[in-house]
Length: 137
Ligand code: THU
Image 1 (spheres, protein in one colour):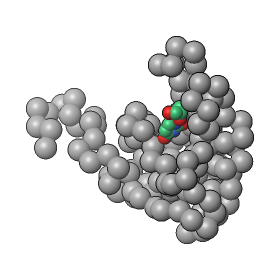
Image 2 (spheres, rainbow, N blue to C red):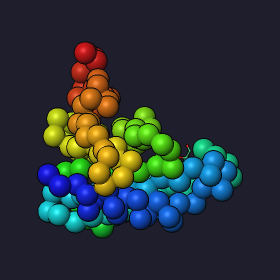
Image 3 (cartoon, rainbow, N blue to C red):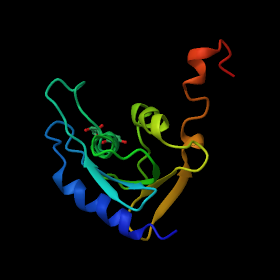
Image 4 (tube, rainbow, N blue to C red):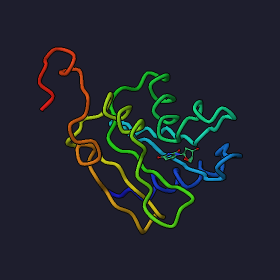
C-alpha cells in the first residue's frame, strides 16, 4: 500500500492545528475502506482537558459524515520522531477499527514512516466483550 498521499494530507492539515498552549501541532488523515480521506488536527482548550487530538478530530468528522469502515490513519506531529497516538485516541480507534488489520502510520514525512496495527498499540483493549464477561484476559 502506498501511503504517501495519506501522509501528505496529515502533514497539510497539521497547519490548521489550534495549539496555543503546547505549541505542538499534530495532523491526522483517516482512510476509509472505500477510499475517502478525512483529516483532523489537534484543537486545544484553555481548560486543557477539553483538548481534542488530531486523530479523534478525524474520526469524529468521518463518523458524523456517516462513515463506519476504516482502513488506516496517518499521523504527523511537530516532533522529530514517529508520533504514537495517545491512549484515548487508541481506544477511540478501537471502537471503529479492526484491531488486527487497521494500520496506523506514524509518519515523519512521506518517505519516512512506520506502520503498526492497532492491536500492537492497544493490546488487551477494553471492548464490548468486557461488558458481557468477567474475564479481561
Ligand atoms: N496530540 C495529538 O493531537 N495527538 C496525539 O497522538 C498526541 C497528542 C496533541 C494534544 C495536544 O494538543 C498536543 O498534542 C500536546 O499533547
